[in-house]
Length: 467
Ligand SMILES: Cc1cc2nc3c(=O)[nH]c(=O)nc-3n(C[C@H](O)[C@H](O)[C@H](O)COP(=O)(O)OP(=O)(O)OC[C@H]3O[C@@H](n4cnc5c(N)ncnc54)[C@H](O)[C@@H]3O)c2cc1C
Image (cartoon, rainbow, N blue to C red; front, side, top):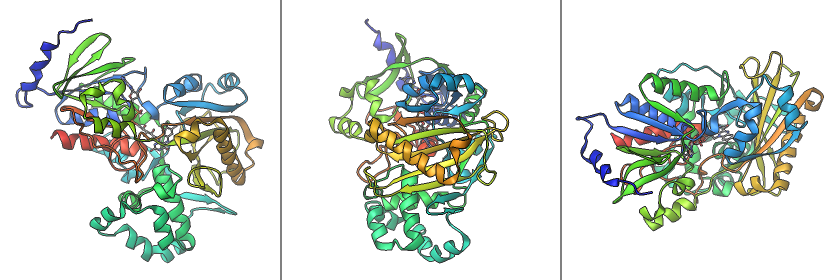
């Protein structure tokens, strides 16, 4: 097919004062929806193209009937179920589930909720502190007396000068623990950096990044879950976008970003060429070259992007017909020590916020959502993945005799939990790319927080580049 590319020179000369600038956002996940919302707020015209039929990307909610198919489309797969998936679908028609375990870190201090507030979008969340599953159950992990004992050291670390934090960025958490890790502070330093990065290997986690992230979130609930399910956030953002005149095209996969002379000029969609003043890709960044010709980028940059690693995880859902009320809406973390996984220990979380009160299960029913951190490589290894599911169930058993109350369970593996792991050896890219007018957004870029917060905060960085 021969395209008439000469038409693509027109927009180069248009400035914001003459006519509305027009952006194409590729992907309607949290990153794309957040970026589109802020662009609209800043007076741009926005068109979003989403390959799926619904918004939300890796943070969507769905019925169980659609679950298995959607998982496969987002680099996940089911590794075990009880009973088989067809039987679960038949018995659990009224349940709504997210693509996998999802809690948002930092509550009102996190980038996602801050963005919703900035856009005046109302959303309700249930939040909690974290408990610890050790020899005994400790809820919350940090009691007033622990905080008092650790306070001087914690404050010293958290409120280190910004310049010192920059220095600390190259220092690993492993070294930090060797230096400061005593008593309960050691446990805290072993747990939180892993939860913040979804990486088990403390030698790869930057102490500076961790303390900087933790300082940003101080004062918020450690973890929150949205009423109505995670997909409600995307729904609310999509409704905002439509109310501001933005367009979202579902079931439309961008085939190619058109780049000429180092400038991104438009996109190819179903054989049609469309031109834009700015193009924002929210694909996991390693997939960028599936829609943009790598020859248009400096070789070094292509090599760097291709070499970036995401994070992996094993996720479990256990649907229960009864739950001890003391557990309702709480979250717990565990650490399984000296196991054959990268980092030697496996950290995970078990959460009780998915239930009829939060509106995702039928009356009187509960879902326990859990995850265990692993590398993408470990998530793809069936034997390792099953081992992690067993670790999750072993820790769940310490909280309650779940098998007695269980109606069904699903375990899935994901090898692209976070677009790019926030680790020392894996520096996240900036939103600006070497190609003019082409930007990156979503959880792959160097914004604040991880996962959903990182994806939401990437929108702020795109605005900083554009305005
Ligand atoms: C199972 C699971 C559990 C998680 N748990 C947590 C958690 O507890 N807390 C947390 O903060 N984060 C969690 N995360 C991470 C969080 O979900 C992601 O960081 C976040 O949703 C990423 O948003 P995004 O917009 O960057 O990317 P995505 O959600 O992947 O959005 C990209 C969108 O682009 C679309 N797309 C791709 N290619 C094309 C194309 N060619 N044309 C058009 N559209 C295209 C995709 O369909 C997708 O909708 C979890 C992720 C998973 C998968």
